[in-house]
Each structure stands twice: as C-alpha cells, then as structure tokens.
Length: 302
Image 1 (cartoon, one colour):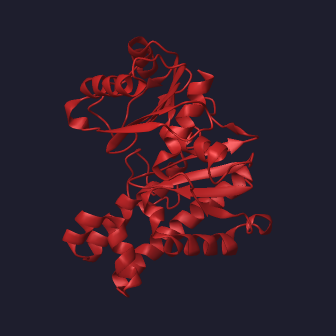
Image 2 (cartoon, helix red, strand yellow; image 1 turned 90 degrees about the vertical axis):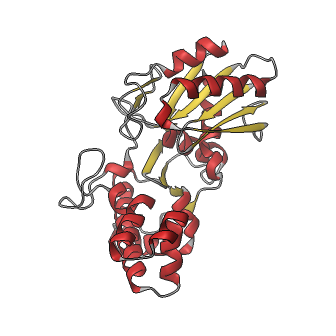
Image 3 (spheres, helix red, strand yellow; image 1 turned 60 degrees about the vertical axis):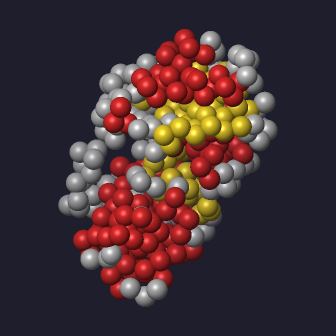
C-alpha cells in the first residue's frame, strides 16, 4: 500500500494506492488552517492516514508540500506563504516516525508535474514543462523522463521568472514575476483596482473576471488580456530554455478553458522561435489529484 499526501493549498489531501499506476483508493480532505501552526495539522494527517490504512503499514509515503524545500532531506525551509509554520521543518522525518514507513517529500508543483508525466496529459512524453496557475504559479520540469531538481532542489520555480522588471512587487522579494502578473490572485487584484464588483470577486475569484470579460466588460477584458499575455511570455521563455515536447497547464485558473489557452497559444505563435511555435499546450488531465499521483510515484521509490 502506498500513502500519498498533498499539502498544497487551502485543503490538504491524503490518499491510498493499492499499487503504483492504479486509481487512488480513497481520499481524505483536511483544512490546512495555517493560523494554528503546523503540528495540529500533522497529527490530523497522521490520524487520517491511519484511518485510510486500516491498520496496515504503508510500503512508502510520498508528500507533495509547499516550497521552498530540500527534497533530499525532506525538510521544508522558510515558507513565505505559510509564515506560521516552523523554518527548517523536518517533515519526512516527522511522518516516518509516526507512520513507520520510509517517507519522501518534494515540492507540490514538481509532483503535480510528475503525476501528469506518468499518468496524465504528459503520459509517454519524456520532455515536458508543467505550470499550475492558481492562487500562485508553480511548475515542474521533466527532462529525459526525470524530474529536474537543480543544485538546491529549487528548479521549476517558473512563477518567479521575471516578465516585467519594473512591475509590481512579488512575495519572493522580486518585481514583475510571472506569479504577480498572471496568477488568480494577480487577476483578482487587478480587477479590484479596475473597479469590478468586489462581492463577485470575493466569491468567485478569477472566474468572475473571465465571466465579465466574456460578457463584454472592457475592464475585465483588459485584465485578462494582460494576464494571458504575461502567461504566454512565461511559456515562451520556458520553451526556449527547455525545448519540451509538450507544455501542460493546470490549476484552478485554467478552468477558464479557451479564454485562457487561446491567448496563450497566440502569444507563443507570435513570439516563440519558429521551431517552438507548434509545441502543444494542453490542459492537465488529473486536476487536483495530480500532486497525489506524483506523491505516489516518490512513495514507491522511498
């Protein structure tokens, strides 16, 4: 039995797989509630895991976690989006002690990329780039069939490529990063500044801006045009650097469908070098479960 966890986002998910490659057996969802710190969540994750396992000991545990982190040691470093969690948190060690199984931890976007590579839109493709466009923008790079980590384990921070050097400040400390221009949070922030109804934005997020743009609101159209152009530029950069066979876009913002994919593909067609313009840009196939499938892969290798 393989145990997989995904700690990214507002909700954490825990799942069991009978064996690698099969559909996940069961899923438990837990609210992250970062304001209470990490250790109450840890005990809830362990309790949910034991309930799913039904007394069995997993052969391996894989965890998709927010970064930055050290995947070799399974240690979460200073998390800018979760300041309530301790720095240098030895997550792999803590879970291995409680669950009695070898545990591997990797960045949540990396493992979503791995899940799509092995079981989703990128199945059978040895070179791909994955981006998740949600509250923030993350990603992962598959090169030669393997997940690319880099020297420090930080490779794949695609949301922090600089698109507009004099642009708005980003939570990473830089300016004009892709994340601060094209994420769901960025779209809502720009829509608020443009005067779109605050109640709809609070309730529906970026989806409300896409809907207003489709209905002909010029303010929303301008916001979406700016965000999709920035995202297209980010994809162009990644095509030129990694020369993938495929680009996969996932995350909640991509639920906008052709309203997002069409402009992104148009930017690529106009600005990428000729050899890259026809690279397929496809929606993710596994949705919110991509990280769990990737976590199952590293659980099998633990």
